[in-house]
Image (cartoon, rainbow, N blue to C red; front, side, top):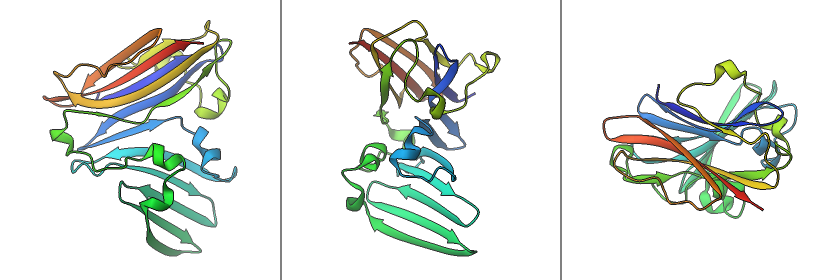
Length: 214
């Protein structure tokens, strides 16, 4: 198993908030789930999915798709350009836009602004951070993030944080890929949790969760 998830145990149930997964020679990541639907102005009736991909050549990108019966849109945001594919009434159209057009919005945070090193050469590379407030053992819009997980679906490789009895904390989570001998990125908080899973003889993926009171 070359996958790791950050899962919060809330008063409402178990919910996945971040995951990293080595699929073939690509590293795939996901965080915050459906919460980005509204930020990206995806219509409520559309199917939506988002993730980021770190391919072997280092050309990491954030992707999302929005589809319905009449129209499909697939957006890949790279460090230097944005690729958009649209399908309407069976007609396919693909075009590119400059990355500069997507600065100063949420995609600037979700997608890298520079070319990463090749995956097998990286020393340490952190991925975007997601965060929210823990109030009365849960967080706002918890039911919109992703479906609740049955407790028997939790794996040994998962990082599970129990926040069900916490109140008034800021929760931050991020992932990274690093050489096995590298230390966990420095973090400051009242509670810090991390877990890693090897993906090769030289590299590991890690998720770091931070809780800050106040």
